[in-house]
Image 1 (cartoon, helix red, strand yellow):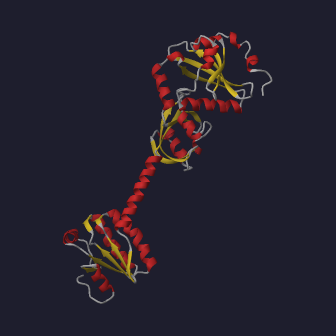
Image 2: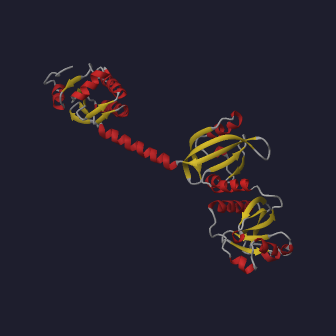
Image 3: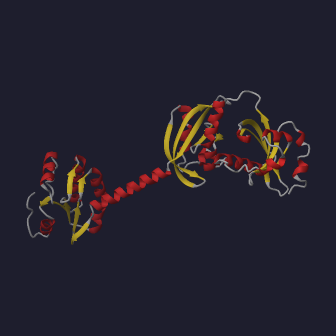
Length: 370
């Protein structure tokens, strides 16, 4: 707790010709101001100024900047920060250079002491607007040296990683930061999708890194731009899982008799379906100890060249595992496709129906054709 009151500590400051005020960020109100501050804020009195609610309509970016100031001043009570701000007294924009420092109120809470110095030269409105846009975008942007020191981050990046974070701690992939920062040497634009270790937990980020020149030092730096694509990645993963489930349902493994597994294939015999079938069938064949595998094509509607080739390879793999492959339910249209494609099914017994295939598998009948 301070030994003297806030008013006593600021005695004499009210006579300064430039605006000075104290802002209580937690409550969103000014609690002290000199006469010059009344002029800047277009206020007829301190009572009117202190009654204004500055938290109303406060943007997330502004809140992030203020929270960063307070953290720094709590850690180092002697610190100060110089930044350019645009205020809007009575709706009119006023550009000032602010010197900010921390000051405790009578209860020991950290407040912001603001010294405002109005611009004396013409303001670059285009640059000012660009900076304001950067502060409010959801994309995370940082300017980083090739050695990995962060020169500046926009509020979105500060919210995601913390103002004191470094690129080496941003990603799950330990080598990602090095790959991104090498763009300072190669002048190549790097694009990657990485798992970012944010304050909200792991998130998928689309990351771009490109070389730029630091306007303050003239040296090469890296602009790292990140966009959260977690929702898209989760949506893609869901679609992939649904497609895999559909593939599994369209070609299930059925135990139809002792030592006999039937694989009914429904709809188009595509490369994706054949690959999924291979992924499940071969381990399942060994696990079940099956001696016969019946590929039932009764429900197959069309084929792809790659899908047929993969099916032929699958028949060969079944034979190599010591099981007998059989194909049943080939309809005329599919038979024409098999002939036109030149698919070699000579190594598999062919039957008209699953019942015929079961009879053949028991040795009760001979295959109708080979």
